Amino acid sequence: MNVEYDVIVVGAGPSGLMAAVCLATLGVRVLVIDHKDGPTRESRALALQARSLEIFDQLDIASRVLGEGNPAPSICPGYGRRVFGSLSLARMGTGVTPYPGLFILEQSKTERILRDVFLARGGEIRWGCRMRDLRVVDEGQLVEVVCDGRAGDETIRARWCIGADGASSGVRNALGLSFEGVTNELSFFVADARDAAGLVPDAINMRIHGDDFILGFPMGAPGHFRILGVADAPDALPDADLERLIQRRLEEGFGIRYSESTWFSRYRAHHRLATHFRVGPVFLVGDAAHVHSPVGAQGMNTGLQDAHNLAFKLAEVIRGTAGVASLASYEAERRPVAAILVKTTDAAFVRLTSRGRIAGFVRDRVVPVIAPLALPIVPRLVGTERLYGYLSQTRIRYRMPSVSARDKAVGRRLPWTGSNYAAVRRTNWQVHSYGAPGADCVRVAGAIDADPHSFNRDPHHRLSDRRLYLVRPDGFVAAAAKPGRASEVFLAVRASLSAV
Image 1 (cartoon, rainbow, N blue to C red):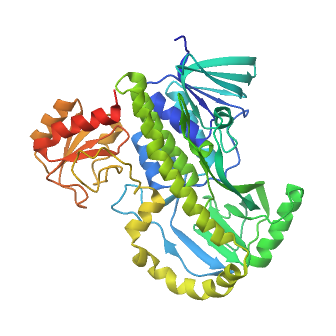
Image 2: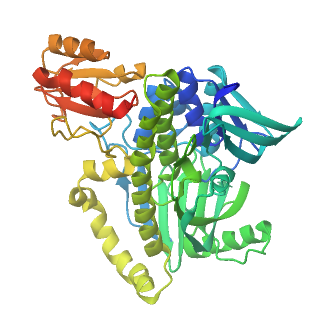
Image 3: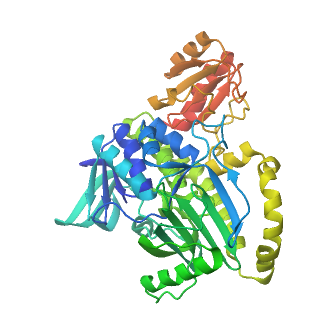
């Protein structure tokens, strides 16, 4: 086939750029196209979860990400002008991940970091290039993307295509895939507020008042907050008039004031899921595949993890170490994650924004009484590590071949022991031992063409000292087995996952 690129990525948002960075790091020829003239300036996505930071670490760019953002030490819920207290985030996840807590880094900065890394690793981005048509030709062996670019019409050919072009995805529409779900009837606003007062500094503020609610995210500088909430205004109302209306409501209902905003916009919350994440050589990631409410700050993170999962699978196929059939595991692994996320955030969002009489009674009468009492004991009731695992997306589990030993680590990202994450930066198949004889680890790794890594016993007891572990290039544990059977088991699992 006469192609210039292995992969075309449509969309230069966080998901598309993450896929591009991973692929470029793995030696794949990638082109990113985007209809915008350049990187975005406005950001609704603000939070990075631990699992996303672990991925940045694997790509050797975590230090830059950490240097551009700031940790959110606490979340402060409240009602109206009243703050109930503070729930610390700083230590949540300690011992689970090298990146405990929650990290604030707006989407535009995340995109800029990924863009710079992608270009530094040999990638190419064409701005102002709008996809007009997408065709799968040559019996599914070739993708043609027809674009309206700065130099006129152009047809770009590649073996594979990744649609990362957002909720109104042209790639998804070209594939004829349904985007099932609902759009919330309410509209919402986001303001990049300066000189804000009435919010707890250096904390995520979350307050309700009657049918109204707001989220306030600290952006580093004093008084700089990203404020999100219900717009509750006709779509025809100009943004400047809407912002003045919002400012009055914030002051009257919450005692929050800000003098000006760098930018202000409105949007609607969607809860939708594509019927499929793949059609032949074309894949969907991020908002092109699933959209949901901002509850839990999961959106951008889920898209980053879609892209990471897909890129490692696709790179193996392009390099010839895995068969095309192995790509079925992308949808099998990531779509259930998105389906659960859409369902849970939708339910939470409905409860939060419902304007029914019972919901109003709960918010106005029950929450102000119960919440201050419950806040200190919530982590103990739910289990801090378990709760944090769901929010941070470190508890995601994929279905793996059943030939290996039953082990809690199988199907999950490699549990962190304090010293083992440097190994996964090598982005290859590995065999790990955690107290099991190192000679066995070397022997088994040699038998299955993987790298051996021996560590001391896991201080958290998540990894057994009586087993060896097969770790995928993306850092997920594919199998566990006793040393005597590990070669046989790991070969079977690799063959099943690679489907050569």
